[in-house]
Image 1 (cartoon, rainbow, N blue to C red):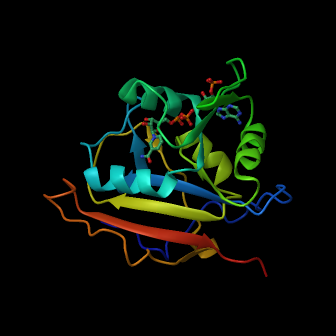
Image 2 (tube, rainbow, N blue to C red):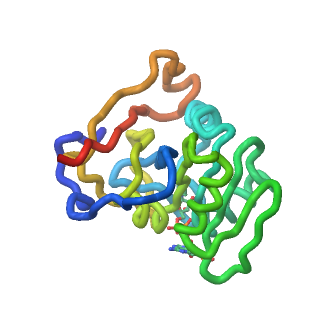
Amino acid sequence: MFPNVDSVSSDKNLSPKEGVMSGDKISIITAMANGRVIGYNNDLPWERIPWDFKNFKERTMDCPIIMGSKTFDSIIARTKKPLPGRYMIAVSRTRAPVQTNEYAIAPSIEQALDIAHRRTNGKGEIFIGGGSEIYQQTLPFVDRLYVTFIDADFPGDAYFPEIDFLSWKEVGIPPDTPPIQKGVNSPYNLRYTIFERKPHL
Ligand SMILES: NC(=O)c1ccc[n+]([C@@H]2O[C@H](COP(=O)([O-])OP(=O)(O)OC[C@H]3O[C@@H](n4cnc5c(N)ncnc54)[C@H](OP(=O)(O)O)[C@@H]3O)[C@@H](O)[C@H]2O)c1
């Protein structure tokens, strides 16, 4: 069942991070199955979803993507190299910080955002690409959520945090978004949508 946007949230008492030095949008992008399951055994629990892969690629192209070290490892295990066209910034408290032309390792989310802002010159979009720990820490201050809801059940050990839908306005999707066709470009029923944080009164 797709979640109802009127359902209650847990991020409602958290205030957005103020004063990040730029006009960048900071956006979470995620795919979640029933029960907010996003991962299992440090991988995606579902069969490959071509529609979602394509959408992820198109949305994030030319933008920096911040992610936890575990998600970074799982992507590299799959692709054997950093994602082309996107600057990957892994956060880790234990690994040595590094910045190459293709990726960076940063010791905190704040420092990852700093690296990302310098790449966009404060005029772009910065993506938060998961996993669970990083979504949990950034949901309180991100501006936008791109969510693919997967209407299927999977065992999981990584979950998206509860969303306070009262803080978010569903703005839908651009009209040129390719159609989702179960059995053609997705093995599952999907609902893709975008939420913008409501302005503070
Ligand atoms: N469905 C989706 O859209 C989606 C997207 C992304 C990931 N996933 C799934 O999510 C799962 C991984 O999520 P996860 O929560 O286990 O791990 P994660 O968020 O990817 O990475 C956690 C790691 O990030 C580092 N970290 C966390 N907070 C930090 C902070 N404030 N400052 C610096 N470093 C910090 C730590 O790295 P160190 O241990 O190196 O210090 C920590 O162990 C996988 O199953 C993956 O496939 C799903």
